[in-house]
Length: 427
Length: 190
Image (tube, rainbow over all chains, first blue to last red; front, side, top):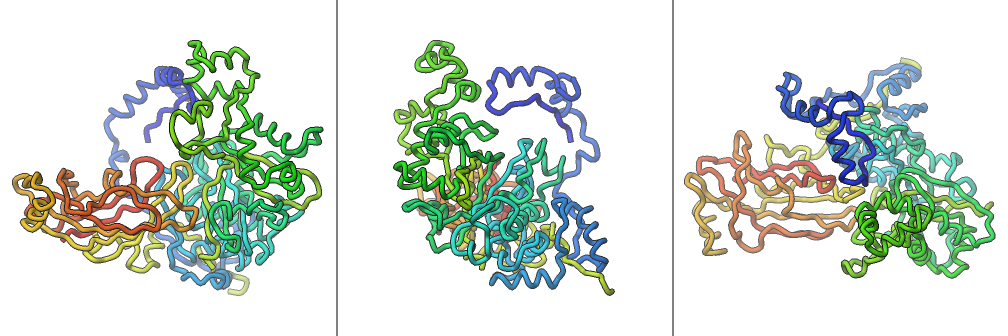
């Protein structure tokens, strides 16, 4: 393959800078980039280049030959089938037990998955998912939840250079049925259900979705430790303040439905700040100054006692609090100007209000929320949004409640909602 | 064999899935095995601008009309419809398209007309792409946005070589971006 490397970053960089990149040199080879591109496009094709059509894949038998457990475990590691930790060997008997937990047929098609948009999609059946569920250490009763995750077709290890993370929130009766931990340590390694369901998503992504081959189908520069179990936890529905709906109800499901909701982001903070300010104000301040790769979306994971405190301050629903947060958070100047090229140019030309904002310096908080969306996209200029179109703005802040109530901790991260799936459809 | 295990291989290959699925679903559909008229083909498309989700589709070519009969229908649809180029004749296909979100949170619509290889005729044999034709098709046309849960049917028109007895219609939802992608499906127009 002919590759020319570009300097980074390129996301949200001004066009002029990108032009300079293109006119400059490949940072790896030191050669002029345009010459490399020209050569790459015009150099005669080699025999290898001329090969076209579909990739030929070696046939893979359904069963491996018998061997000792130790040797088979090593084989699985060597083949890249694991996450680096030991797995449960998926014997026919164990897989058959797993399959008993669903009414779906083993050969039924569950979904398709790809490492990133340019990649080929891989298709998988119920039995294939069951193999990975066994490997992850899941009990059969977890299987419908795992199938629901698989049915969304979203890889847990998106092949981006930016080391994505995913998050799974489980709601509904299934949480108690399978013994998920909704209490002390809900986000930690204290529950087989929380751990193995989340882990299984990564095994599925690697083994059924083609993801997770560093340098080939995984390009995250540093990787992400959240990929081990994908931050899988249930919402503490019993701990929700009166009037606060569970996440799955917010997303259109019935309270009696069992649902998994998937999120995508990069990072999470675990926070308690014993400020004289009320907690809901502290959270607002954190959201305003919070910075990670995802700058225009956030998910808050509140302990039940934090949720109760927030609700008591006049927020009858999650949505009301999320809207207040979005409406009352600005954007730090340095962040605003580094992501608003057009407005920066206008500011330099004296156009108000940008010029006035810019004069106040990088430390000035620009009164534009980064958590308001218009037409599904992050608003670039909410100050003038109403006059530009009739789309109803929505907040890009989700709120989930979980934990044991032992401290006023809350967590926040740049996770955005990616979709929900019914567990009941896979029972 | 004591202390030895046989384990199920982590199934990685598309070909494995193809071997274990019923004939009605998309894996058995290919350019060398296009779906017959009246045969339902189930498949999936991925939709979403940032995070894709899977939506289920079922496509059926209900009937086709070719040659003079097609020309008559086109004339009835619009007197402005002109005869095809020398050596070509029209084929009209009446197509049923079912679109389902898997879950209540799957609410994105699907555009029946936007992708470059969606509802395009290929020459039987070497599968060369025929040029699209610009005619007014009989009502209803197969185009526009379809919402999850909806089923629509409509007509599409092609001009194929008169000597081509086995033209094929291709459905590829790939718009070239990160959304609307799924398996390429093939349908007999004969």
